[in-house]
Image 1 (cartoon, helix red, strand yellow):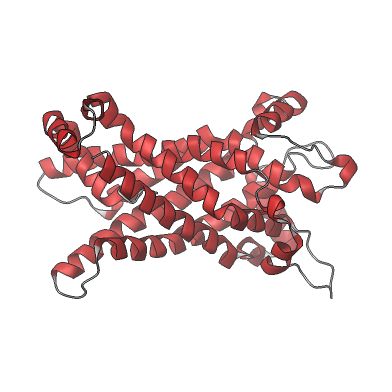
Image 2 (cartoon, rainbow, N blue to C red; image 1 turned 180 degrees about the vertical axis):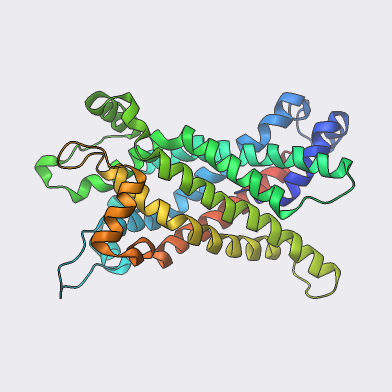
Length: 331
């Protein structure tokens, strides 16, 4: 998500329709004229989004590692104690917590770059259209932009996401069965070589569904919350600063993003850990949902919600603040 989502979305239309004004602003900021060219105006939302996502991923990687290990932990036998987020964290060394970081960074470079760039571009078009019609952008438009951006980006980023899950779960296997991936490139090439290139899109259905649900919660609710907070400020309900509004809106958006996307994230993780059943047949999204619900209960999909939220909210906040700063530098 981009801290400039609300401001960049509104500003995207004006930037697209006024390149000369953008050049003047760039000159005032002391940056090169390259940033004011049409190509860079269109590319900056993608570039800023990717950098912001990569910084945020570096910050929350240990939390993400605990979240994945919690999802992949086998269902405990009756009477035994199930592992908790804290027990899993205590059992890992610091290097283990950063397993798969290269895959996570590459995923952000592809996925977050695409989803934030597409969202900003879509919102710019919708904002301009709404402005021409003399009406504000509504929640429905924000939801459509978020869903579309999330779905497109998820398809592009699925191979990196698959490599990340395989690298993070490799340590749970017996030593003799571990692939011992050296890097994200090694993981991608090994999976493609042993399972086929198309296997890199294993779990793409829940990945796309998760991304659409997450983007719907993050981007649409963040943009809507930011808009509502600004309106409440005008009416004298509060006196929050811009940064405080951004943090409050991102926290609310993180909750809705977690609630809508966690079941799909859980199924995606299970599918990407094991691409086939014991009989050699692939398990589809619907089949995995049914299998987990039948064997572990429907509440299993929301196990680890707190850990998942703690992973989503800080990632959103860091991404927002970094993107906001980058947007200020390149405005």
